[in-house]
Length: 323
Image 1: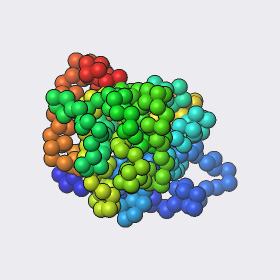
Image 2: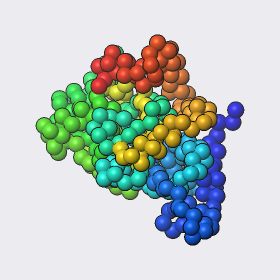
Image 3: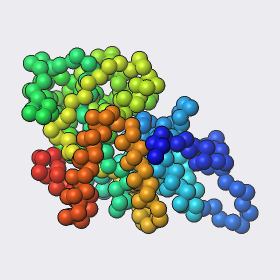
Image 4: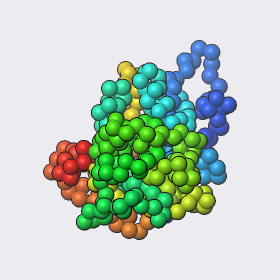
Protein backbone atom coordinates (compact mmCIF):
# COMPACT_ATOMS: atom_id res chain seq x y z
CA UNK A 1 0.00 0.00 0.00
CA UNK A 2 1.23 3.52 -0.78
CA UNK A 3 1.57 5.06 2.67
CA UNK A 4 2.36 8.59 1.54
CA UNK A 5 0.06 11.18 2.97
CA UNK A 6 -2.61 11.92 0.38
CA UNK A 7 -3.43 15.61 -0.03
CA UNK A 8 -7.03 16.11 0.79
CA UNK A 9 -7.47 19.79 1.50
CA UNK A 10 -8.92 20.41 -1.93
CA UNK A 11 -11.53 17.76 -1.18
CA UNK A 12 -12.32 19.19 2.23
CA UNK A 13 -12.42 22.71 0.85
CA UNK A 14 -13.89 21.77 -2.51
CA UNK A 15 -16.14 24.81 -2.48
CA UNK A 16 -13.40 27.07 -1.02
CA UNK A 17 -13.32 28.94 2.26
CA UNK A 18 -15.11 32.17 2.95
CA UNK A 19 -13.15 34.93 4.61
CA UNK A 20 -14.47 33.92 8.01
CA UNK A 21 -13.10 30.40 7.58
CA UNK A 22 -16.46 28.77 6.84
CA UNK A 23 -17.08 26.14 4.22
CA UNK A 24 -18.86 27.61 1.24
CA UNK A 25 -22.36 26.24 0.87
CA UNK A 26 -24.72 25.83 -2.09
CA UNK A 27 -27.32 28.55 -2.50
CA UNK A 28 -30.26 28.06 -0.15
CA UNK A 29 -33.77 29.30 -0.38
CA UNK A 30 -34.81 31.90 2.14
CA UNK A 31 -37.05 29.37 3.87
CA UNK A 32 -34.48 26.57 4.03
CA UNK A 33 -32.96 26.46 7.54
CA UNK A 34 -29.22 26.64 7.97
CA UNK A 35 -27.68 23.39 9.20
CA UNK A 36 -26.12 23.39 12.67
CA UNK A 37 -22.46 24.38 12.71
CA UNK A 38 -19.52 22.45 14.17
CA UNK A 39 -16.41 24.53 14.73
CA UNK A 40 -13.48 22.12 14.53
CA UNK A 41 -10.54 23.53 16.48
CA UNK A 42 -7.13 22.55 15.10
CA UNK A 43 -3.80 22.77 16.88
CA UNK A 44 -0.76 23.79 14.85
CA UNK A 45 1.16 20.60 15.58
CA UNK A 46 2.86 18.85 12.67
CA UNK A 47 2.29 16.06 11.64
CA UNK A 48 -1.21 15.98 13.18
CA UNK A 49 -2.53 19.20 11.66
CA UNK A 50 -0.72 21.16 8.94
CA UNK A 51 -2.33 24.58 8.88
CA UNK A 52 -0.30 26.41 6.24
CA UNK A 53 2.18 25.93 3.41
CA UNK A 54 2.01 23.63 0.38
CA UNK A 55 1.05 20.60 2.51
CA UNK A 56 -1.78 22.42 4.28
CA UNK A 57 -4.50 20.02 5.32
CA UNK A 58 -2.52 16.81 4.82
CA UNK A 59 -1.77 16.11 8.48
CA UNK A 60 -2.73 12.83 10.13
CA UNK A 61 -5.71 14.27 11.98
CA UNK A 62 -6.59 16.51 9.04
CA UNK A 63 -7.20 13.44 6.91
CA UNK A 64 -9.19 11.67 9.61
CA UNK A 65 -11.25 14.82 10.14
CA UNK A 66 -11.95 14.95 6.41
CA UNK A 67 -13.37 11.41 6.63
CA UNK A 68 -15.59 12.47 9.55
CA UNK A 69 -16.84 15.55 7.74
CA UNK A 70 -17.79 13.60 4.62
CA UNK A 71 -19.98 11.37 6.77
CA UNK A 72 -21.71 14.26 8.55
CA UNK A 73 -23.41 16.31 5.80
CA UNK A 74 -26.21 17.33 8.18
CA UNK A 75 -23.75 19.78 9.79
CA UNK A 76 -21.89 22.76 8.39
CA UNK A 77 -18.23 22.36 9.29
CA UNK A 78 -15.88 25.23 10.12
CA UNK A 79 -12.14 24.72 10.59
CA UNK A 80 -10.38 27.10 12.96
CA UNK A 81 -6.74 27.13 14.07
CA UNK A 82 -6.63 27.50 17.83
CA UNK A 83 -4.49 27.00 20.91
CA UNK A 84 -4.97 24.42 23.63
CA UNK A 85 -5.89 27.14 26.11
CA UNK A 86 -8.49 28.66 23.79
CA UNK A 87 -10.04 25.26 23.00
CA UNK A 88 -10.90 24.71 26.63
CA UNK A 89 -12.02 28.28 27.19
CA UNK A 90 -14.53 27.71 24.38
CA UNK A 91 -15.60 24.38 25.82
CA UNK A 92 -15.96 25.74 29.33
CA UNK A 93 -18.23 28.48 28.00
CA UNK A 94 -20.34 25.89 26.13
CA UNK A 95 -19.60 27.08 22.60
CA UNK A 96 -20.35 24.65 19.72
CA UNK A 97 -16.78 23.45 19.28
CA UNK A 98 -15.12 20.07 18.83
CA UNK A 99 -11.53 18.87 18.45
CA UNK A 100 -9.48 15.78 17.69
CA UNK A 101 -6.56 17.04 19.79
CA UNK A 102 -7.60 16.55 23.40
CA UNK A 103 -6.35 13.97 25.87
CA UNK A 104 -9.00 12.53 28.14
CA UNK A 105 -7.98 13.66 31.63
CA UNK A 106 -10.33 14.07 34.64
CA UNK A 107 -10.17 17.86 34.83
CA UNK A 108 -11.49 18.14 31.26
CA UNK A 109 -14.42 15.75 31.64
CA UNK A 110 -16.24 18.41 33.67
CA UNK A 111 -16.76 20.53 30.53
CA UNK A 112 -15.85 18.14 27.69
CA UNK A 113 -17.68 15.10 26.33
CA UNK A 114 -15.45 12.47 24.74
CA UNK A 115 -16.27 9.87 22.12
CA UNK A 116 -16.65 6.27 23.23
CA UNK A 117 -14.15 5.04 20.63
CA UNK A 118 -10.47 6.01 20.62
CA UNK A 119 -9.50 7.17 17.14
CA UNK A 120 -5.74 7.55 17.64
CA UNK A 121 -3.17 5.69 19.74
CA UNK A 122 0.43 6.85 19.63
CA UNK A 123 3.78 6.61 21.35
CA UNK A 124 4.10 8.66 24.55
CA UNK A 125 5.67 12.09 25.03
CA UNK A 126 9.36 12.42 25.79
CA UNK A 127 11.69 14.95 27.36
CA UNK A 128 13.21 17.09 24.59
CA UNK A 129 16.63 18.62 25.16
CA UNK A 130 19.22 20.43 23.07
CA UNK A 131 21.78 17.96 21.76
CA UNK A 132 24.66 17.78 24.24
CA UNK A 133 22.77 19.31 27.15
CA UNK A 134 22.80 17.62 30.54
CA UNK A 135 21.73 18.92 33.95
CA UNK A 136 24.30 19.44 36.71
CA UNK A 137 25.34 15.96 37.86
CA UNK A 138 24.24 14.36 34.58
CA UNK A 139 21.17 12.31 33.68
CA UNK A 140 20.06 9.76 36.23
CA UNK A 141 18.83 7.10 33.84
CA UNK A 142 17.14 3.85 34.79
CA UNK A 143 17.88 0.42 33.34
CA UNK A 144 16.05 1.08 30.04
CA UNK A 145 17.30 4.63 29.65
CA UNK A 146 14.28 6.37 31.20
CA UNK A 147 14.51 9.30 33.54
CA UNK A 148 12.01 10.53 36.11
CA UNK A 149 10.70 14.03 35.38
CA UNK A 150 9.61 14.43 39.01
CA UNK A 151 13.07 13.52 40.32
CA UNK A 152 14.79 15.77 37.77
CA UNK A 153 12.73 18.79 38.81
CA UNK A 154 13.02 18.06 42.52
CA UNK A 155 16.74 17.29 42.58
CA UNK A 156 17.86 19.88 40.03
CA UNK A 157 15.98 23.11 40.86
CA UNK A 158 18.11 25.05 38.37
CA UNK A 159 16.64 23.06 35.44
CA UNK A 160 13.89 25.06 33.75
CA UNK A 161 11.08 23.49 31.74
CA UNK A 162 9.38 25.32 28.87
CA UNK A 163 5.76 24.33 28.27
CA UNK A 164 2.69 25.31 26.26
CA UNK A 165 -0.25 26.53 28.39
CA UNK A 166 -2.91 23.88 29.02
CA UNK A 167 -1.21 21.16 26.99
CA UNK A 168 -1.50 17.81 28.79
CA UNK A 169 0.67 14.71 28.52
CA UNK A 170 -1.04 12.25 30.84
CA UNK A 171 -1.56 12.32 34.58
CA UNK A 172 1.93 11.20 35.65
CA UNK A 173 3.75 13.92 33.71
CA UNK A 174 1.08 16.52 34.46
CA UNK A 175 1.37 15.81 38.19
CA UNK A 176 5.16 16.24 38.11
CA UNK A 177 4.74 19.64 36.43
CA UNK A 178 2.00 20.63 38.88
CA UNK A 179 4.20 19.85 41.88
CA UNK A 180 7.11 21.80 40.38
CA UNK A 181 4.88 24.82 39.73
CA UNK A 182 3.68 24.72 43.35
CA UNK A 183 7.13 24.44 44.92
CA UNK A 184 9.16 26.58 42.47
CA UNK A 185 6.90 28.67 40.17
CA UNK A 186 9.85 29.97 38.13
CA UNK A 187 10.96 26.44 37.20
CA UNK A 188 8.07 25.80 34.77
CA UNK A 189 7.70 28.52 32.14
CA UNK A 190 4.72 28.90 29.78
CA UNK A 191 5.23 30.08 26.21
CA UNK A 192 2.55 30.83 23.62
CA UNK A 193 4.53 31.91 20.58
CA UNK A 194 3.11 31.56 17.08
CA UNK A 195 3.53 28.06 15.73
CA UNK A 196 3.13 26.47 19.16
CA UNK A 197 5.76 23.73 19.24
CA UNK A 198 7.88 25.43 16.57
CA UNK A 199 8.04 28.58 18.65
CA UNK A 200 8.76 26.58 21.78
CA UNK A 201 11.68 24.75 20.15
CA UNK A 202 13.17 27.97 18.77
CA UNK A 203 12.97 29.39 22.29
CA UNK A 204 14.65 26.26 23.66
CA UNK A 205 17.41 26.78 21.08
CA UNK A 206 17.92 30.30 22.42
CA UNK A 207 18.48 28.73 25.88
CA UNK A 208 15.65 30.58 27.60
CA UNK A 209 14.96 27.25 29.30
CA UNK A 210 16.64 23.86 29.37
CA UNK A 211 14.13 21.13 28.50
CA UNK A 212 10.63 20.77 27.13
CA UNK A 213 8.04 18.06 26.53
CA UNK A 214 6.50 16.76 23.35
CA UNK A 215 6.45 13.91 20.89
CA UNK A 216 9.59 13.01 18.96
CA UNK A 217 7.62 12.61 15.74
CA UNK A 218 6.45 16.24 16.01
CA UNK A 219 10.00 17.55 16.22
CA UNK A 220 11.35 15.40 13.41
CA UNK A 221 8.52 16.39 11.05
CA UNK A 222 9.07 20.08 11.86
CA UNK A 223 12.78 19.73 11.11
CA UNK A 224 11.97 18.69 7.53
CA UNK A 225 10.60 22.16 6.78
CA UNK A 226 12.60 24.11 9.37
CA UNK A 227 16.21 22.92 9.12
CA UNK A 228 17.34 25.79 11.36
CA UNK A 229 15.28 24.41 14.23
CA UNK A 230 18.33 22.84 15.87
CA UNK A 231 19.45 19.40 17.00
CA UNK A 232 17.61 17.67 19.81
CA UNK A 233 17.74 14.51 21.88
CA UNK A 234 14.76 12.60 23.26
CA UNK A 235 14.68 10.97 26.67
CA UNK A 236 11.90 8.53 27.65
CA UNK A 237 10.08 9.32 30.88
CA UNK A 238 9.16 6.93 33.67
CA UNK A 239 5.93 8.88 34.24
CA UNK A 240 4.75 8.31 30.67
CA UNK A 241 2.57 5.30 29.78
CA UNK A 242 3.57 3.00 26.95
CA UNK A 243 0.91 4.50 24.66
CA UNK A 244 -1.24 7.64 24.54
CA UNK A 245 -4.90 7.40 23.54
CA UNK A 246 -6.99 10.20 21.99
CA UNK A 247 -10.75 10.57 21.49
CA UNK A 248 -12.91 13.03 19.55
CA UNK A 249 -14.34 15.59 21.97
CA UNK A 250 -16.87 18.42 22.07
CA UNK A 251 -18.25 20.89 24.59
CA UNK A 252 -20.26 19.14 27.32
CA UNK A 253 -23.65 20.51 26.31
CA UNK A 254 -26.77 18.89 24.88
CA UNK A 255 -25.45 19.92 21.45
CA UNK A 256 -22.01 18.42 22.11
CA UNK A 257 -23.44 15.15 23.40
CA UNK A 258 -25.54 14.84 20.24
CA UNK A 259 -22.51 15.46 18.01
CA UNK A 260 -20.45 12.86 19.85
CA UNK A 261 -23.32 10.38 19.65
CA UNK A 262 -23.43 10.97 15.89
CA UNK A 263 -19.66 10.46 15.60
CA UNK A 264 -19.82 7.26 17.66
CA UNK A 265 -22.35 5.83 15.20
CA UNK A 266 -20.68 6.82 11.92
CA UNK A 267 -20.18 3.91 9.51
CA UNK A 268 -16.81 3.04 8.04
CA UNK A 269 -14.65 4.77 10.65
CA UNK A 270 -12.92 1.58 11.79
CA UNK A 271 -11.23 1.42 8.39
CA UNK A 272 -10.29 5.11 8.70
CA UNK A 273 -8.73 4.45 12.11
CA UNK A 274 -6.69 1.60 10.65
CA UNK A 275 -5.54 3.87 7.83
CA UNK A 276 -4.61 6.58 10.35
CA UNK A 277 -2.46 4.06 12.21
CA UNK A 278 -0.72 3.06 8.97
CA UNK A 279 0.01 6.69 8.12
CA UNK A 280 1.36 7.31 11.62
CA UNK A 281 3.59 4.23 11.44
CA UNK A 282 4.93 5.37 8.07
CA UNK A 283 6.19 8.62 9.63
CA UNK A 284 7.98 6.93 12.55
CA UNK A 285 11.70 6.20 12.37
CA UNK A 286 12.34 2.48 11.92
CA UNK A 287 13.30 1.89 15.57
CA UNK A 288 10.22 3.66 16.91
CA UNK A 289 8.03 1.88 14.38
CA UNK A 290 9.07 -1.49 15.78
CA UNK A 291 8.43 -0.30 19.34
CA UNK A 292 5.01 0.98 18.34
CA UNK A 293 4.02 -2.25 16.62
CA UNK A 294 5.14 -4.32 19.59
CA UNK A 295 3.19 -2.16 22.04
CA UNK A 296 0.09 -2.17 19.85
CA UNK A 297 0.27 -5.97 19.60
CA UNK A 298 0.52 -6.20 23.40
CA UNK A 299 -2.37 -3.76 23.74
CA UNK A 300 -4.53 -5.79 21.39
CA UNK A 301 -3.81 -8.97 23.34
CA UNK A 302 -4.54 -7.23 26.64
CA UNK A 303 -7.71 -5.61 25.31
CA UNK A 304 -9.04 -9.02 24.28
CA UNK A 305 -9.27 -9.89 27.99
CA UNK A 306 -10.71 -6.50 28.99
CA UNK A 307 -13.44 -4.14 27.88
CA UNK A 308 -11.52 -1.93 25.49
CA UNK A 309 -8.10 -0.57 24.47
CA UNK A 310 -8.67 2.27 26.95
CA UNK A 311 -9.11 -0.25 29.77
CA UNK A 312 -5.94 -2.01 28.71
CA UNK A 313 -4.00 1.26 28.72
CA UNK A 314 -5.36 2.11 32.17
CA UNK A 315 -4.17 -1.27 33.41
CA UNK A 316 -0.74 -0.68 31.91
CA UNK A 317 -0.49 2.74 33.52
CA UNK A 318 -1.43 1.34 36.92
CA UNK A 319 1.13 -1.45 36.59
CA UNK A 320 3.93 0.92 35.55
CA UNK A 321 3.10 3.51 38.19
CA UNK A 322 2.09 6.12 35.62
CA UNK A 323 -1.05 7.93 36.73
